Amino acid sequence: MHPPPDEKARLKGSTKETLMDQLVAGERYSPYRFFSAEQWAKFRADTPLTLTEDEVRRLRSLNDPIDLSEVRRIYLSLSRLLSAHVEASQLLFRQRQVFFDANHAVKTPFIIGIAGSVAVGKSTTARVLKELLARWPSSPTVDLVTTDGFLYPNEVLRAENLMDRKGFPESYDVGAILRFLSGIKAGLPNMRAPLYSHLTYDVLPNEYLTIDRPDILIFEGINVLQTRELPKDGKAVPFVSDFFDFSIYIDAAEEHIHDWYVRRFMRLRETAFKDPNSFFHRYSKLSKDAAQAIAEQLWENINLKNLRENILPTRPRADLILRKGADHLVEEVALRKL
Image 1 (cartoon, rainbow, N blue to C red):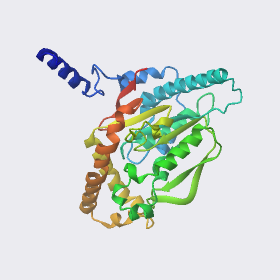
Image 2: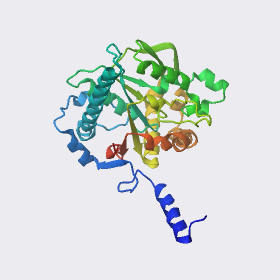
Image 3: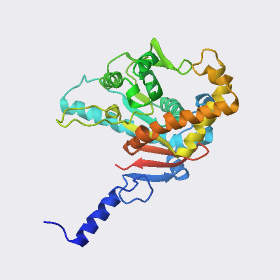
Image 4: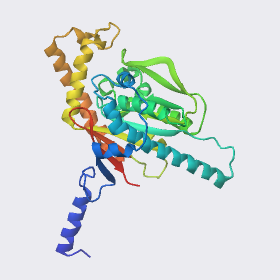
């Protein structure tokens, strides 16, 4: 039996509504609450500022203008929010111990995932949060791991013809990431995360960062909220984000990220690329116009494509979204409703 014409129209309109952008403030079906930076800053309450201007300058990435004012506006409130989530997680852990009568259960770290495009400021956010969280009155142990070390070595990527896909989901050893995070969540000691050199643009052979049961782990990377196709037989397919207790997506308009990426490339051409050991050393010898053309080509053919195909589609999976404006500072915060 088919619905009458007017009912068809209503159903069609309802479907259209559910496909609207849920990241627009006021959207009827949005699972988020939205706050301007000024509104968000008020949630700081009495959270103390424990960083100095010199420390913020040391923590920020190249061309990132974050300063103490931005830490006050955005990151102190975020630190307070995360403190509440960590406390709630610890309470639930203790309640489960009672439920299972497991007095000797190993406490598992609270894992925070940070995602977003290249050049959007993930590394700065991760480093600032690491310092703020480690300075809570409870003095938790906080570690930071990036997914760069889990990229396949360049030798493997060349053999698989994936050098131009570096940073895309298929260029990562996802199995290694899952084993690492699984071990962290199991409370295993001395888990090793491979290290990466941005100078040589490659994984460092036999070099690792040892993570020994921290209270909090920050796991940062462009594709950490990535999903995969689910099998039709219902078998379990773990996602990296399955191990997260809280996730953050750093967001900005395409044109802003493009500008930041190109400006950073041109700045690196005058600094890090001049090192003869740099993978990109050849670009430091180009004229300014030629280098600019290379930067535009890398953005258009690799980074923009990865953003549109793989990174941006994961944005609605985040618990919290920090939306930046053209000045690289946060303008809006979206927090998932409970």
